[in-house]
Length: 461
Image 1: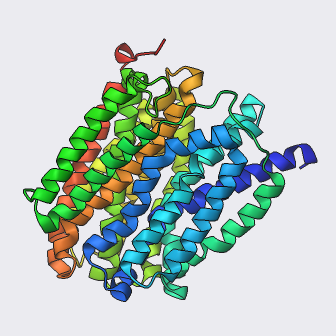
Image 2: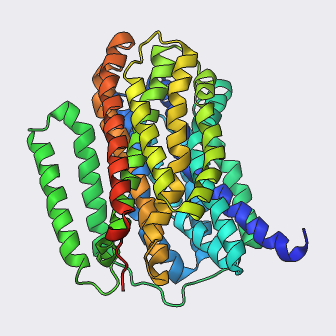
């Protein structure tokens, strides 16, 4: 490799490292949850917030971080994000209690929001040749699904050998190396015309998502008819109405409502929420099942999930080629069918189901996750003007994080009462989660049929 290609390759590697640690910290923590529960004496609600505090901040502030990078410089914001993420990871590892851990996860996610969309922009601006840019973005995009799938495996190794705190400590040296490399190799860039900050819109998005997630998590304890939960629901409804009204009148809105006139784009956002809600609900319950019900150590639990990671690695390439050759319809239909079948198969799960059969059920989830991400992004940006393609992709990413947050909130609310009982009580209660997966798989198929019908494709002017 000559010097002309070495530097862009190094920039791509640095950006991929950043997206790997950010996304992996969504799933890697799941394997550590049983140890966190025992060590910090955390309640099921505390475990939910350990995951959701992170994903909630990611979903709420992704678009704002992209605007900050466009205005203040992408490398500058990228370096700030790496620093905050590293400090947050260090605080997570040192947390003396579950409240401190949740607070540190918020700090960690605040840094993470500056890495995901900003790294993508850096890659797009580093590779000037269209063909090279497409390949680089494909590599970068595949890292997200791979990190999400391999997180439980690597988490199992780390937790089993070094303890749950090392899940967070391991980020610190990676971030330190990334900072040093970014200072030397990542070029600075800004948008020719930066979008204006929309602080009101950002606040409304944060309030809306926070109220919805908090209501879902706490409703199990307080009850849906409690004044606190009803107030949260009312605030969420008012925030949504205010967001639509305010954004429709703003010149540079945080959420470009014109995008939602496109049936493919709107369907892609909903599909992103549906898909990641299904996967994260599965992952949250499965890691608890393997360790608390089956009694497997973290490493063995992670290895049980290894086939999912392998399928994601293989099928993400296949999915990209299918999208390029035939469009997003085929891989999305297969993914939705696999999620439906996975949910149906898991309905038969018991505390004593043979592990080879359990892993075979997990393979269906691997097929789903391996195929679903590339066509969602493609569907989101198809028909968009080039000036809006980046924003469309960012909103699709925010949809994934929102789905991840809701998946944990809903699964935790369902499984929480049975967590202490374990055994048949746990697997009996978990059937509601598997029914949810089945329903989400059917929804994904229906949304695919809706969004890929040629007669319904709508292009923005």
